[in-house]
Image: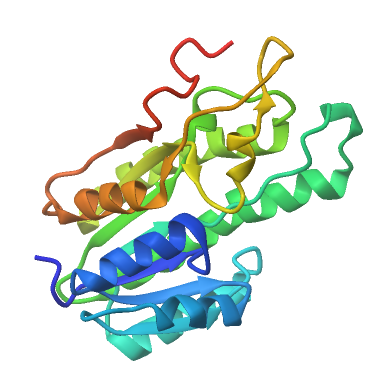
Length: 250
């Protein structure tokens, strides 16, 4: 049953986060929208159809105090939390790793690893304390949790870290009915990935146009993962454009 569920989606001002938040809302969820740009979150909320309520919360997930404030407001507004989609992420310029600055490295780690951890931590605190207790956390891992693209050291490293965090949450959350899974996404078309349609570097040094899929397909997969009862979990799901270079990459 999705009707009446409460979800929080990070990075919901655009792309996969927006598509997922809207699909959840259209299926009866009330959704807390988080991201750094309030205007973009309010734009997402303005697209809502029949369904649950939406709450726009400007949040910097790299700032633990900002994360605490967002989850506190979500609990105060809706009374509980059933689903966290840890979607927000960032990347560094696609340059050889020796050319990256310490700040460029740290910015990616702060969002992709620290931010995901801070959000999971707050979600767990709410899910353990509520009645009935429990809930689900879905982390956005990316194809890069398995195989890197050229010049992607910060992003690839952090996405491998997400896999370890997902497994740990799954283990530690069992006793409190908290399920945790990971969705590894390949070539969903968003503003950030439109470059795929123009040509991106390949392992052999060439540049090639890559097939893409819609963000709505990812949203449908997230909805499916959360449609299962808490005693059932999709531990890892890979969803990708069928003809993209992943199997056999390089």
